[in-house]
Image (cartoon, rainbow, N blue to C red):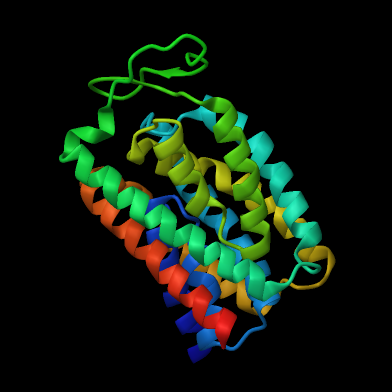
Length: 273
């Protein structure tokens, strides 16, 4: 009973941060299950993928209702992300785990530094409604749903390639792929950070489902761990999706960088332990 309560509490915290930052909560769930509850890594990844689906379901509707998530962009990129998730699920049991963790830690640290530099260059809260100048061949998407200035999505092919990588990472590490998708949409495609996190929440349920199918077929999703954790995630994600619009984008950026660095540290610890 006590273990179940701790799983619900941990899931709620993961769902809250996952919904606010568009990460799915896996960056907290996987370390929680492996380091605190001593679950095998692959079992923790399988449970995390199910929780990511719950996070997406609890928060995506709210973001769509408020016209923050870019539905057209999300569904286009999800074609590539789901493909990557299927590939990641198939090779998850073949690649050296230590090498993946070291490479992924490097990716997280690089992304953290890039996000910090972008934040200093922006210099204020108005960054979230940037108007990019019109460039020929970069007008595939145009979202006028935000109040105030609109934005133009650019470099769609590069975003599609990054989405494939996000899907692979999602299935390998059970993190929903948002930790890659949000920086790709924000830094590469020019999407405002708040819109990127909302669109990531919309996408990650499909991404996680593609990867979870592989883990379910191998019997690596424990229902006794998944049920209480997913319950907590649902509560946390429901709260996060309703308060996200009240949080300053600079605070979201700081939280995102902190989560990235924390995850990188945990990956390095696991790789060299």
